[in-house]
Image 1: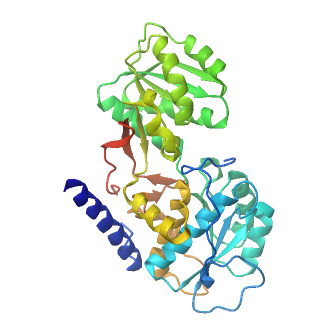
Image 2: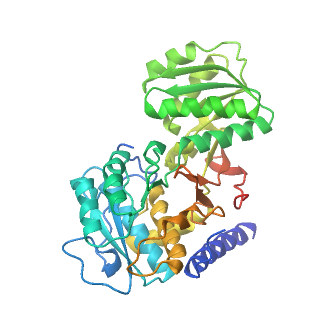
Image 3: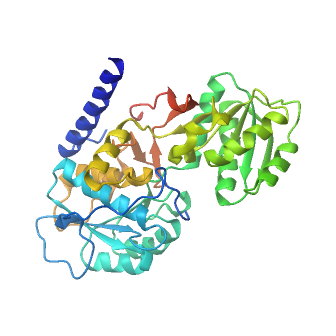
Length: 397
């Protein structure tokens, strides 16, 4: 009975979210690794005009807002791009919104060219691109025409000057899990950090988070992504295990490979901490080495209901980050009530300190243009992950 009640409650929450979006009351990278494994192309369906890919000059449309979706529809990341495009279509259908026209442009054939064409065809808002290098190419073009860019990247360096970052960033995830660990009594921390840009940003975030929480980093080692390099990094850590928790700033698969090495090196009781990357890994529950580990991420409660609807419509599982496309549409629908057709998108509305609501929970844009998210802490347990610290429902003004 409890499971049934919980399921009914989650479904009710999704319905309320969609209803709120419809009523406009919601105010207040590299190759992508899918969470659900390779996604088969969706079965042929008749797409509504608002989501048709660009194939020529757009017909005159004086009744709908023109919004461009810039994602890879061919090439290595095509499946992710299709999933994002499908998510935007589903959001329009769920909100029953007929005032927004979304046209898809393929960034795999050239992001700058896609943006130039989208703007020439009258789009006043860009959703995407997905990859940071594409955001860098698109942002200056969009800025010259005063067209905001809501990117799906998690690279904070591309934010600003009219470009916004909707992706899940390691800084916020690390800050949240470290804060939770500190409040749980952990004072001494260690870090295992991969070399590269992600690792550099993760290490900086880790040091700052521990300091802010009143803890201490007693050791931090870096490694290349190989078993031998991880073992060498762990060997440099104190064998007397003076730390109570260790952050492994990598995928859950890499973390699962590192944990046995840590245990053999003397860190027999240290709590393992992960990052937002773990929320996109389907195999996290099948890694016994990670039992008891903590990581912070967006909530999956509403996402599960969305994924069910997505499968029913498109015949395939969505990529986890496709929820960014869905939430970008909810945000657009919310703002569209004060957006006159044919006029520029009211970019100032993106700065609403009350934030917005979506499948991934509450979020708002900071002054830097990065989405600040309300995150929960999950613990890997019994073949899955359970919430041990719920995400806050909103933001303090």
